Image (tube, rainbow, N blue to C red):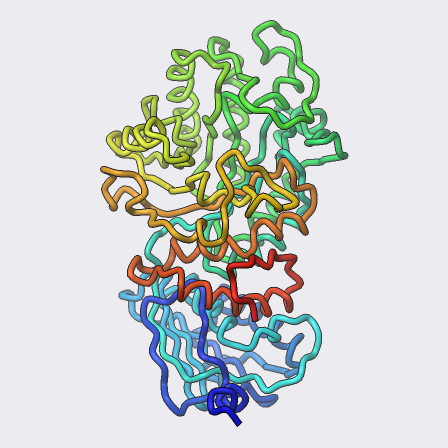
Length: 502
């Protein structure tokens, strides 16, 4: 028998992790096998650590059929958040030996990141929701890991098409497997208003009743939004809510005639054009409205950021735009949140602590706006449309998506460096990456998954792994190994031809 084939049949596969850890070394002749008698030990139990352990064993009980009791102290698999502070908020260490697996971190969040790595070390069938046959082996390995950037996000547009709480929770589950820690929800746009605001109830009653194509749509009640926020927190993802202003506001303008300059409400909009709507900058009511909206959204959001949009305000006179952004930003700060916005907001005066989200397409004017934001002291999150937009078609034959920013293959989505993409921006100004998913052409979760996978893990790796680890040739082989995992998870992923799926 071929020696390589023999090794494959008698040894667990080498780890193929995404994101690539900072350091990982094999422990020769050490192979861990999860047995039916295994236990999971939690050192210094707490509510957060118990929840992490419960998430792990709940999944493994489904796929292995093992009891896997969780006990205080050490176990066959030991989870500990008593590690040194030097590991950082999200760092962890993981060691797989012949008889034990140990995951150590300094925080619950770091431990959760380590557990996501442990899940990838196990055979892909460990993600199944029904009993599978063993063996459950992991090749001996030692890992020390921490993120490159503090902000690693994905955006879901729930305004163009509405997605249920269950859909959003599924999206959170899949994104968190790749160590993403921000969920940006695009909650308002021309086509729909999706978050309950008690002081302006027509926003959801009327503005939430439409979507692209005229479907039934919907909105999140405060209880719904709280459920999403909590579920995200349980997966150590922070929700960043976006209320897009002053453009992309037709749903609001249609809901309240008095917000319009002429006092007449436009009809609901179910198309996909952009840039035709605007709040009235000169009206005091505009800021009373935003004050109420930002207050209620802030009250519902534990995270420290509110995204005020600011993009594609094509019919807002530029002088009005420069007046509007500081006034809107002041209201966000008034309610205890940091301001985040698309890179156009950098043309105006920004408050301290602002975050500028760059969505440019290699155009000099967009790059200069990003630099202008940095000169004001703002931090940058990188979301270049021609690399990170998950709604762009993979190729000309893609059944969904758009192509205005170009076709984005899996390789193109991966092959860029957030630190060097914009010339003359100091690396220290970049705090992370985000992959936005706009949903003009995506009206169900299966289509969302198809456009998200396999590109999202690459963006996640750009945000987590050191620059020295970023290499397409090795990455595509590691990505190929994720296919069987997604099959076990029931993910509707695109089998990109440039990936050697196995």
